[in-house]
Length: 113
Length: 112
Image (cartoon, rainbow over all chains, first blue to last red; front, top):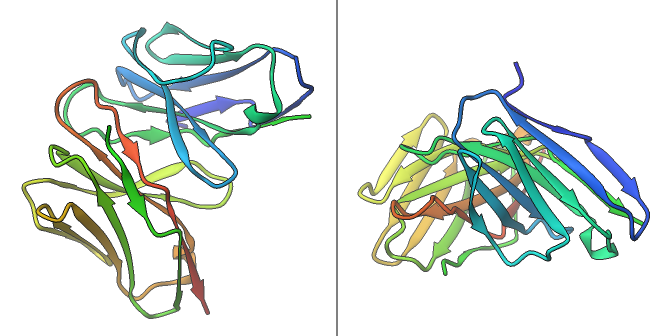
């Protein structure tokens, strides 16, 4: 009965590789998000989708491309990985209307070597 | 854009009260939240307050909002070792597409 799930939980890869992180929510929410949490625990929003439509796109390198095949899924693809991409990536979801409570996934720890 | 600031670290003894403070810059912020992040886990909503409220109490948690000073606090009564975590303040406003700005996080250490 997991609400927001992410795969994989850990991802270790070499510089220059391309990788994807998947996110799924079973809460029936309309809006999904990707956040990056750095080593100092600062949390920054990267993207937000509402009903499969991109609505927030913060200053993020073009190497990061979100894809939402349906409103329950929001995947994050990263091209040409760099050392600075090492972080924990959190997916979240919320209702489009009403209280803006965001429900977070468990995170994906990405380590780029 | 919105800035949300918190002190980075707080240490308290078990059984004492903890007060975690937060300041924000956007006076049009409508919803203010406190999230808890335990080690190796995602963020979990603890409580929230609407901007037209001054105070909200929920069991051991008390949220105080000073809208004039744009200051939010979270008081945890009878702090337990299980309360050790990072606490994030967050703010959003009712317009737009619900972009929530998170604070820098306060690491709470509870000493037995």
